[in-house]
Image (cartoon, rainbow, N blue to C red; front, side, top):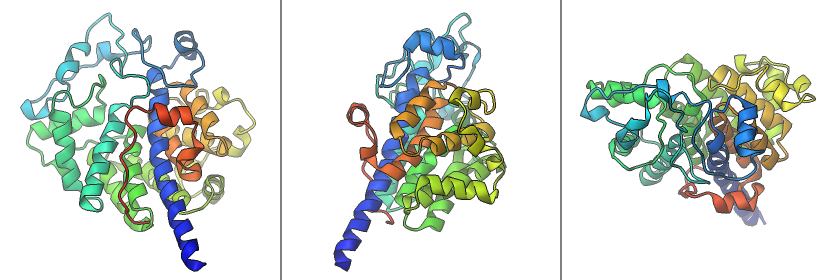
Length: 347
């Protein structure tokens, strides 16, 4: 009997780890076509109420690629490749992800697949191995088709082109997009929480160093690991809220649960990418919809703003709670590039 119980526990743990990764990829892909829509009226006019994977369309009314500029400091820093002509063109509103297909993931999630390959190959986290893979992926033309390259990558390769050692190329950051890269490490090493937390924060600091990111990353790591190791998501969040042991928890979350979502995310918590607002927004949605992963990710998507990376973080938490089968089959089957399978890891 004890042996059968151990098998059940192992399978449950594997399902949670798998669920966290699928939630990460699904939350990102669902929101991709309406990423960085800050005008919700325009979002609805262009796409309606989004419940399924859709292809992005041009023009994107809130796109600011026309005023975004990036010039490689040298050959080692060339990362825009064939997407460069869409940057800095006055009078244009190119979609940030214009060449992606319905159900496809953004660049930061594609890099999670690179990370999973590194974890599997090395039997754990190896920053130097990941950095070699990351640099090769980003500097190889055609490795992805995403038009937008986040500031963290532009800063990293700006420094790398100047000869800065890879481990020191990151610039101080505060964007939630950095947290998605922690998920594969946390899932792989979930059975050893302290090791998992340390490795995930080490990985975060490669491209997103700084106190704000470390603080947000630590909170996210603690919550995800707690759920991966068996505590219900609602209980995990409420325990941290009640403890009031982190500055990102200082909001009246319980009171907000009775309000419409668009009264909370937008007016009270910005829909922008900065962790001081985006992480509390994720916690609010996770607490309110902990029992309904589909509703949670649909609501997040239609709130706009930096919904892809809010969606990735939110999806990981929900997937850790409900497993892959907690998401609608149409989302699971429609994901174009599912997460690679994790090897055994620490379970």
